[in-house]
Length: 274
Image (spheres, rainbow, N blue to C red):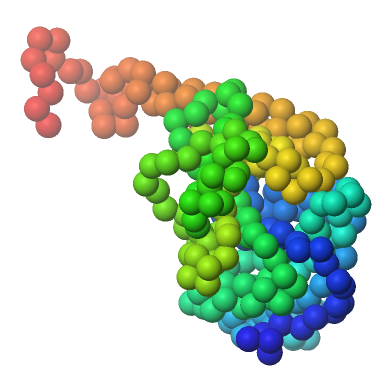
């Protein structure tokens, strides 16, 4: 599937790892990928022909003139690890997930991975649990094979087991890797189920700390830690407001309800049968 992507560089990489990320629940994967991009000197490697995977839903008009259709960007980047003896990294970041060609995109990404000798694929996602937003997020894991599971469990503290589903391409890419006999794993940061629609840098921070160990990279997480503290306060504020609305609604005196006219008296001893 070489025709579906274009290389912008041809570096010689040391048995790299591939990290792939698309938007998903609580934006965990993209927060993680974007932070890696910001902290490490990644360089352009390739881009996908997005017009093959996506259909435009319209065009923009500027000063009365039609602009060309725009498509979500999907790009590859590479990082030459400056830690002696450690593997290099390829990072794939997609602005959106295709509606009908996700499986084909996953195979195309795997093609590029094999072209550069990738030894393992990592994706990231959110794990919706009953965790409270004040608690520290743990990282759950899923693997394509027993050897990968055993290797990672010896190195880091991950929670695994159980039956669940990883939606979208953050999961589909793992399935394609398994089909093709590649080692792959998904790291899932815990997110409170009641805050699934809010960005959760705390879950991304937990994943970044795991990736720092797995990838052998020097990574300062100070900015993500600050973002996690800010997000906790935001969730606290939103939940407090929601609880306030809930209490106000269910404690409204019945005689103030819109169901009753101001001039109508309710019987004192008989239930309302309307």
